[in-house]
Amino acid sequence: MNLSAHPVERRLQISGVLIILGLLVEALCLAWRGPLAFMVFLCVGGLLLFAGIAVYLISLVSVPSTKN
Image 1 (cartoon, rainbow, N blue to C red):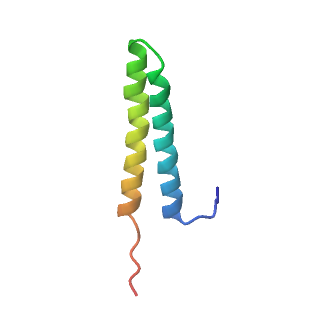
Image 2 (tube, rainbow, N blue to C red):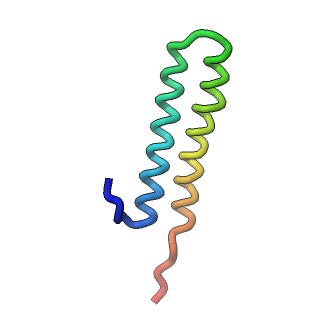
């Protein structure tokens, strides 16, 4: 990972990592049986997915304008 990346690129990388982690948690919960698996699927996986989507959308909206 390039640590000197543009701030928008860095936020997009973070959002991608959060979404991938959320999908991995949800995929692992599909092989796990029981009511606790559903709660982990919903709370942890859903929260990671929501955070990744939120960071992605915020990074798109908060791009500084380049007025000359």
